[in-house]
Length: 233
Image 1 (cartoon, rainbow, N blue to C red):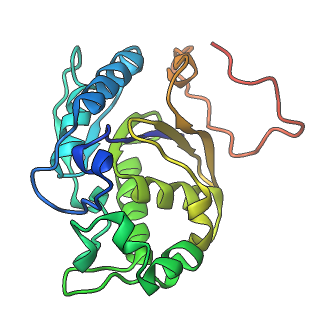
Image 2: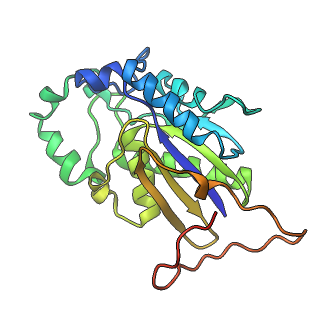
Image 3: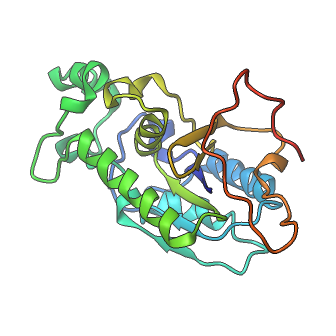
């Protein structure tokens, strides 16, 4: 089974200023964001990663770079993990956008939301491309891999909604804070959502167990009835 660690970028100047950054170039982490990503890099240091894949936007590249020290890896960029394309909403204050008629659609019926302007896309398109990216990297890296995808809040929420089997219209019920970790393990028949919006604590359960002998045990796609005893370290 393949495990993806979904890491949201740290806090940015736009986040702190209440601005919808979208694909605006040059948006960087603020001082708090830099502290957040240093901390998450240290937390994830014990976890062996097969790849670190990032949105091409600078705030994600900064965040993904904090996970690299001590690893023989480079950040791979994938546009499909990029932020939702908010079109004409890009760069506008959230306090203005909340007054737009489309805001209620984004909140209550996001699968129907298409952002205005020639550069805008629908949230359903955002979800489709992001899920396709995760699935493709899973196939490329193989069933024993643990890898990291650094992306954006709405994108990660959309991937989690898919993994949870939720309609996209429910994705606003999911919270993904800056520099938080969410984890999904994909088996042959279904994904398992292991963590959501994790901003602290032990990561030992994310370290794959050592292989015993040459024969690899096939990953179990069944859920544990009753909940089981939790991860063993």
